[in-house]
Image 1 (spheres, rainbow, N blue to C red):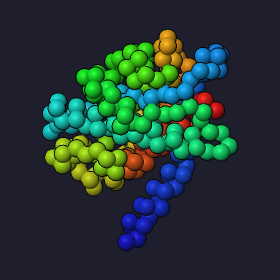
Image 2: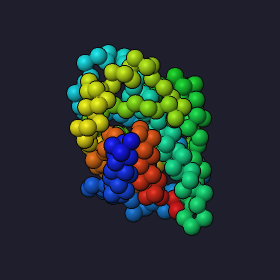
Image 3: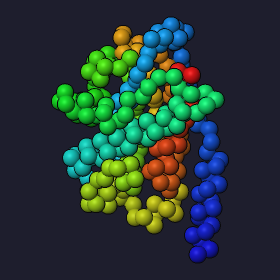
Amino acid sequence: MKVKKTIIIAGLLLVGLMTQFCGAKRFVTPAFYEKTAGHRIIAIAPYEMIFTGKKPKKLTVQDIREIEEIESLAFQESLYHCLMRQATRNRRPIRVEIMPIKKTNRILEKHGIDIRDSWDMTPEELARILRVDAVVKTRVEKRRYMSGLASFGVEAGSVILSHILDDSPFDLWINLPTSGIRAECFLYNGRDGSVLWGIDIKDETDWRMSANAIIDRINYYFAKKFPYR
């Protein structure tokens, strides 16, 4: 009990210390207010997931595709909820409507566009199909796959999740599994595809944190810095 309590406290302290991202860079076009004056609704595209680490031995190509698509949807849903919380705040609310994720993905699916297809589409193409004024596209680069994504409403098969890492749970816990994540979030004008706003962050993530905490932490930062105020 003492060991578990110590680990939990240490984890909480670490989360508390990790309040800033390393090398965060932001961009806002000087013509932002001019270009967005008529904007009424925006959409969040599925996240592009890039894996840069060593592939777990027991995962097939299909397993990896499934995991990355699950992660993509989890990140996408998390950003939507983080932005919605920001949108309803009294002090600095977001002034545009954000298309619900389920509607966004349903429209894309109706047009024969799957998650991976959306990664390669231009902002203008996505905006035209979704009938929105601007599109948020995000890219996440990381060296580990995530498990424990059921709370986002998505699940991978238990066999896949059991082989996400070659290490045993004990080794994973004890060996201080920190690893960097790089995430880029851009808001594109639907009319001409120009970048309206963007942010690029690097985060040394503690993988003992839950998938929820890791994903929400990144998206909370994006939402906090999001424009349209």
